[in-house]
Length: 155
Image (cartoon, rainbow, N blue to C red; front, top):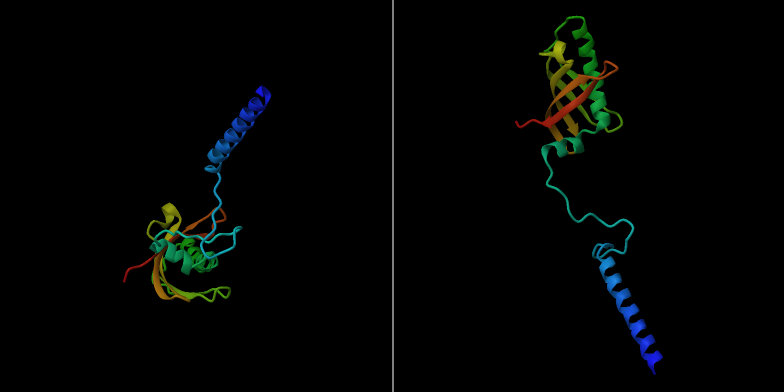
């Protein structure tokens, strides 16, 4: 009789410790599945941050568009290297990959010799409509312009 109660107590102790350990460890593991979906591998995102004007710019003008804008401003940069100041230039740009286009204007070369940067204003005709953006291009290591800032201009 003694061995039966001994083994019963050991088994009950083992089971209770295992259940308690399983309960504690299950709090460290999280498996989520969105309501109404059986897709466990890629659950949908249920939260999102409030979009800002910077997010809007990244959605409208992608990296390819920025490269096209910078390439068009390189023509002004080569004129600035020779000492010609062309602030009244109006350049148009078109990206055949995205279909976006626009016009570069108000190219400001103040501080170009100190910083290697130009400020500009551009229109952008995108799928979301036509907007005006203000930005800055600066020379990179290869002495080509790259768009460093771009934001929506409040009209």
